[in-house]
Image (cartoon, rainbow, N blue to C red):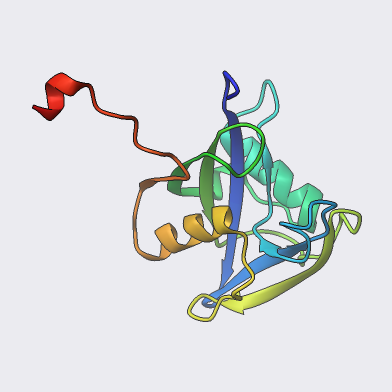
Length: 155
């Protein structure tokens, strides 16, 4: 297993009870054609808020003031890629611009979905973060196996 964790930022763009999702175009058939949130990895030298705003602009062309992002969930994930990840999910309800697909090589479509009727072909990692947002759960883990407890604890 890798000796580091990636930090991902995910943006939940919500407007009138609808959530914006992007459909992945991915050489990995596990993810290709599935829905995802606008997201990406934290770059060196930037805060998670600036990373989330940057990813939203790069992927869907909207401008978000980092101060307008609200942290709604943290997810510690294993098995969603080669390295474990710490995913930070941010809610955005204010932005400038109309969402468009700015990365057609990585994304085949963008669309709005009612929060109470999300697509079934949603990648499990962002799906878990969306579910946590909807149920006001601040933290969760996904894909981790519990380590065996030492014998002294079991007795």
